Amino acid sequence: MIHEYKNNGYNIVMDVNSGAVHIVDEIVYDLIPLMEENIDVPVSELMEKTSGKYSEEDIKEASAEIKELAENGSLYTKDVYEPYVDKFTEMKVKEPVVKAMCLHIAHDCNLRCQYCFAEEGEYHGRRAMMSYEVGKQALDYLMDHSGSRVNLEVDFFGGEPTMNFEVVKQLVAYGRSQEKARNKKFRFTLTTNGVLLDDEILEFANKEMGNLVLSIDGRKEIHDKMRPTANQKVSSYDLIVPKFQKAAESRNQTNYYVRGTYTHYNTDFAADVLHLHDLGFEQISVEPVVCDPKEPYALTDEDIPKLLEQYDILAKEIIKRRKSGRFINFFHFMIDLEGGPCIAKRLSGCGSGSEYLSVTPWGDLYPCHQFVGEEQFLLGNVWEGIVHPEITEKFTRCNVYSKPECKECFAKFYCSGGCAANSWHSTGDVNGNFKQGCELQRKRIECAIMIKAALAEAEEETEAVRKEA
Image (cartoon, rainbow, N blue to C red; front, side, top):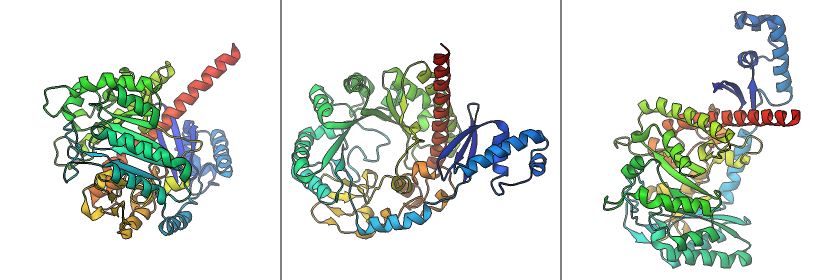
């Protein structure tokens, strides 16, 4: 499968199955799709199909280059992964391994975010705080069901987890106490809105949390509109920004990211990303809202063209800033063209419902935080374990080949089929496709590859100048 596109002056060709990316000139760009079905198509036919745009000599030279790429296994390659996925899936069904957990340490919140799927921490249910006993049992369940895997991920989530921070500290201490004896290593993450973030919490987070997720939506007017305080008298933006700046600097601008959500109210979201960078944040994620389409802040199909344009604007500005020495890492433009995720990850995504589970304050197990409160996805609990294995199996069998629309999509090995929760909420099926999300994801991947090309070109130019000097 070949995907070609033009972006920011680059002619980019992706060989989907091999992962190879080529930056080519105009003639090679035009000939590649014409030679896909028949690598030995006559030169005369290529001249006819390109309407005499190129000379015979130029077409001979370009077609020879294309043939060489094909012979080297970086163009027109076959999909070798589909036969593998069935064996891989059957292995996971027979020997399930849990690698990560999201602990809902607090089903309560001190903000009233409009778009929150947790409904201010309630998750379609009652407000509650996770006890140490429930959390301990959850960690035990994770260790007991992680097989031979050493590295385990645990995210302290909410609502707002700092509202129950003593239990967070107790659970981290318990996890650390088990690492040596159980041959496990925990990587903890804390997601916070920052309202209660203080020096004590930050010091603990910097010691124990492998990652820190700081929730902020961007410009003050956007953030305060969507993430108001409970009494709506105090600006949550003014309250949290200095704390988040201190947190980012205290972690040396690594192992954290500020995470925002854009909505119908800020379809010019590139300005929010750049605003966050101007505030001093280098690790940034701003994602599209997923919600009931009847909500006034829901993204519409009419918004999509502008959103796609925003990613182009953002990509060009990121290149400009990186070239000037201002580092910025936008989460959705992160892409590894050399190694990338392992094939299992590329086929099956985050592992929700099988390798990754969410735990409510009272110990119920769900496929991920976005399914909490949806009773048809209640898997079991941390004491009895999975009592509905048929749900787990359904998620385990969810991959890029179980989704018909993914099979022919160039982005499938980068997005891994997308988010199961988004698919279910938009189509009623975890094997469905959230169409708006797919369009945005494809654009993000195209921009990410273009950025790689531009920065690599700039590096080559710098190296050439250095050698001449």
